[in-house]
Length: 350
Ligand SMILES: [Zn+2]
Image 1 (cartoon, rainbow, N blue to C red):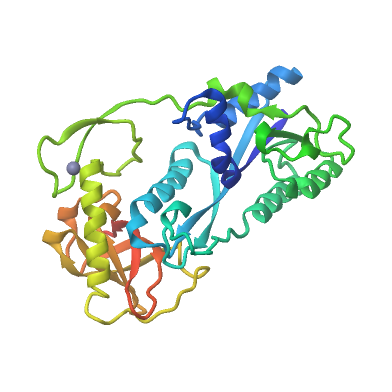
Image 2 (cartoon, rainbow, N blue to C red):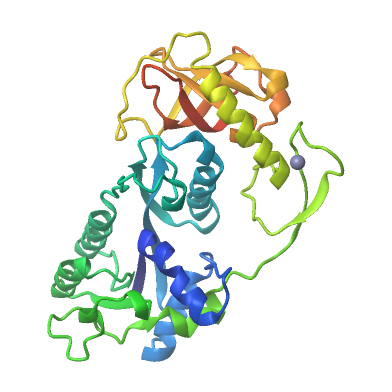
């Protein structure tokens, strides 16, 4: 059977969705990443008369903010949850890299006008190219690669992959697709099929907004807890309503700045964006403020990490106690002044 792999430049796709949304006159247009690889496969099958391609794997490459202004915690968390969802629910291979925001706001419009800071994305294109090349070179990897891309930087890898005897399809967005990919002559020898325009498959890949009956699980919630949402939750992830999210955000800002660390210790450390940020660590819960919804986790090396009740996964706030062992993902390292920050906090049962 002919094997197919899909390689998605997530950063490019994310930042160019607005073109599709505009063409479609649907400001809230989002892609259903669960169906995207299948629709691309079907499109290629129908166009080229393949009798069933074997979709082996889908890769997505992207980046996530670290060391941002704590006010943007909710925004950053949604990004991390999105990548986790791709892994957990759709079994994507997700390769993501931290972008250091140097304590600034994540959105350009939220930063001051005279701030010339430009976030630097690292590794994303090289990671995509390496993965495409690697899987082309190992025996039994793939026969056809679909690259969901637009930047011209990828042309060398497309050439090399084809020189290895693999076939390449490009899926893209017209308004942000490098000219050489659409060249009918294909002078550079980059592709084996006409470009698949996402515009043409929009109806099939659009996220259909489903509604879910949920209950807000925040202890700070006021009024009726039951409500309807279009936000899709990961398994084990508690739901918090918009009001509570705003309260959390205020709380975090206050506590995170107020409590430089649990006890003034454990803040030594270094800002090493390539170190433990994004990785899983273990430690002991300490200095828990049960009634205020936050606490700290201390690793064996003495580093201390702030966490909030909204950073828990698969565990209730009530089950969190000081002295208990927890596993968590580092989202910020301590910097000598403030504690680090943790997300995806879960308890380790001994
Ligand atoms: Zn609530």
